[in-house]
Length: 200
Image 1 (tube, rainbow, N blue to C red):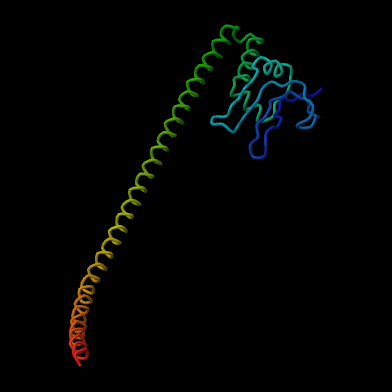
Image 2: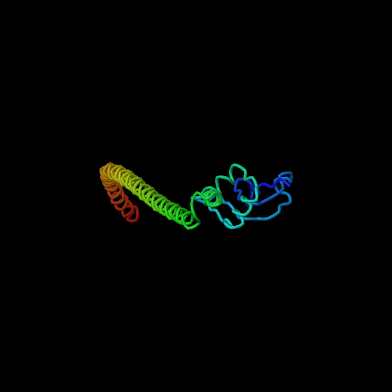
């Protein structure tokens, strides 16, 4: 039976994650499989890979063919390197201790690279957040200046209107005061006329 190590799609539309499975090459993509050996989630940064190392190595040694993506995943996890080193031990190129030391050196180097990548991502995220905050502060400052400018303009127009209304009010009061005097004179003139009529 021709076996393949491949991905089985899960998740919703636009947010897929995958199970890494060993299946018959003739089975459909999401159909029956022989064994599940891990999972792969490309939606995180960096991508999350959970792999059963021993079972993946076993299936590679018995001749299962990985697809391109799973080969890349197995290579990143060191399964392909381990298989290569074990083949070297079988051929007598070096002993098992040397193979293990080479693998551990590679693993240590990989972990350091992953750590440096995480730190770099963290620093980049921090720098982006700082840049966003600075941009927001600048925008808020510009907005506050604009609001202050508009308030000053409104205050100036109100002051100008009050200055225009004050002389007009004085003129109206001045006009009303002389009008009140003739009324008083008329009232005085009417009062003597009334007294004269009574006298008659």
